[in-house]
Amino acid sequence: MKAVPMDFDTWNSLCSVLYEEAASLDEQRWDDWLSLYTDDCVYWVQAWNGEHELANNPENEVSLMYMDNKTMLEDRMWRFTSGASPASTPLPRTNHLVGNISLVELSTDKAVLKSHWQVASYRFRELTQIAGRSCYTLRLENGQWKIAHRQTVIVNDQVQTTLDLYHI
Image 1 (cartoon, rainbow, N blue to C red):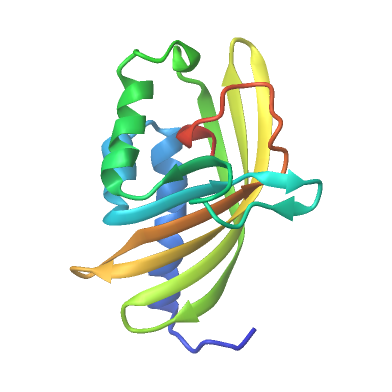
Image 2: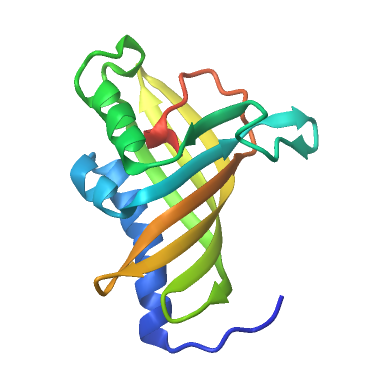
């Protein structure tokens, strides 16, 4: 991986997007969370085809989640916030921990970051741990870094709960 020169303020701004996403989910600030995404965003959670083989094409292979615009994220968010989804009622309490952030690519209006994360989810007196890694493409829009693409791998994808956006 080639080193990418940058200043502290840029690094801080990029990392802040990932940290704010986690905090918005934990605090159930859904509109704040949604505002972090571009209108043409892609949110993809890959499925495992085998023990160490991931699905690589969301158009032709099974995905755990695949949404290719912000409207699809809004629809999914509405399902679990409206009370219309029994699997999400009541919503769990979550705690997202984001770490091992690394910069892969940086230009004046685009950045690619990778991170590892863990989420503790508590509901019905049961604590579920979910771990994974994500690759984010951030785009600068009107002076704000926004998530244009999030590709996620869940390490323990066979969890004993209904998996949704707030778990990732």
